[in-house]
Length: 340
Ligand SMILES: NC(=O)c1ccc[n+]([C@@H]2O[C@H](COP(=O)([O-])OP(=O)(O)OC[C@H]3O[C@@H](n4cnc5c(N)ncnc54)[C@H](O)[C@@H]3O)[C@@H](O)[C@H]2O)c1
Image (tube, rainbow, N blue to C red; front, side, top):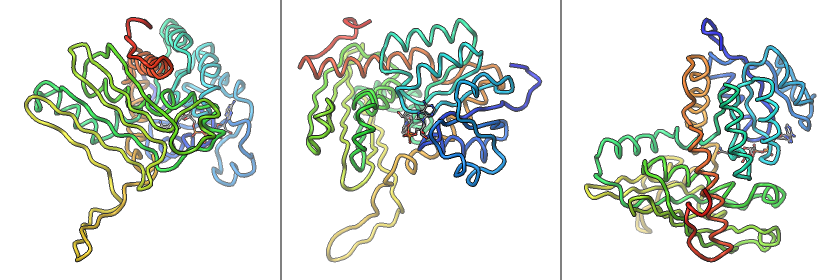
């Protein structure tokens, strides 16, 4: 990257839920980013022109990646397309931010990370929760020794409503698509490596999910290298909203992060004590984290710094998702040493 530059030219590929969030942040909140185009083979061009006047739109993603004016590519397409797009970016020497997961295969994930490293491009995966202000503060407190040695981390991650079955089919399954955030968060908070995974899961809500080989409810325990634990509690449907809580317990104290609510009023009356519901969607709950992660990506490129999500973080989260599925299928704890 030319050190005298003060902006990075970006192509955003895929304009769905995540694409729109990242595009908005790049356009409105990160002056060091210059969005030169958006590419999406499916998005209606006429709609795009009305919604984003003045921004170039291309249907062909290969053409978009190869354009010489593009420095970096933000990939927000369905998971099944990530590997091929990232590979094209590496071949064209473009830096990449790609939504999670990089790929469902651990081998492909490792190969692409190695290829990116050899070609000197920066590749960052969207583990956005690392940039959430509450979780960042929890990690800071833990690393400053405020709760002593962290012994148990409990993460509750429950979606408000079942995903569309078409999405489930290509998502990679609950562990790779959903719990992957918790695998990453458990390692991020504890600052230790996981040695064993034991997962249980089933379908409570919708048989269609079972028919496509997935689950909607899971409980996973992780054992860290020093014998400490993580407990990950996942559901695809919580009737009261997007349930995002965590707790870290240590020998000198405890940290809790509760749900973010629509407001902080607490109403007391003869029927009870009443509060607002939790924010209902990931776009609301993690809005700040998406902005911060993209800001960090652009900052790393402009200032020749390593991107803040490391290759080992990407490999370990993918590996833990793979191990959890193996554990579920084989109804036994799985040691990481069996897979590495
Ligand atoms: N970090 C997070 O919190 C988070 C949340 C949701 C989704 N995701 C990840 O983001 C990715 C996208 O998910 P989404 O929910 O935004 O999906 P989406 O279906 O809403 O959007 C995908 C977009 O990509 C386009 N597209 C489809 N095939 C394409 C191709 N071959 N090339 C270019 N564009 C293509 C579609 O037209 C659509 O506009 C997934 O990998 C998912 O795992 C991350």
